[in-house]
Length: 231
Picture 1 (tube, rainbow, N blue to C red):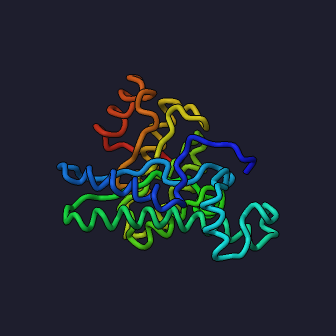
Picture 2 (picture 1 turned 90 degrees about the vertical axis):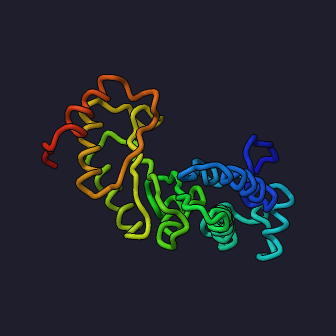
């Protein structure tokens, strides 16, 4: 917005979306089971892109650029800018899904998503509830990076409800992240919660932080035992 350049791809640009679709299409010639999309979103707080190409494209539809209006939800044009960005991210997911379907291969498509459905649409342009509900993705991995078991359970249940039966949910359990550092006991409890809520799998982030003590706890307490814990 201040005229600075950022080392990020602008997902509203058709050439950028074509670049990623072509990259993924090139992978489909190999024997892969699935494609997993990380960072399929904008950075927090609509940080970019305010280049002339994007602004002019937006102006064709709404007569103003996002730089010509107030940058808050009191401006309907700004609200439309937020929706427009989210629409472009969804278009990319749609194009990737179409490329996979055109290959004729049984390749599943998934995405890492932020924990909360509603705020994700506004802050990062990620309409993952729509992706799940319409079958654009086969699985979602909500990044539930917390040591708070009640919040982990609540947000996972919300994701399960949003996904319904059309999309699998593999919760992201935070080991060492910018939001939390977990203990071996908490990781065990979060895995149990995920299984009880019906998650078909889970993801640990980040893998190099999953130490031997944690792995041994999981092996003994979850994967080789039928015992459970109370909520």
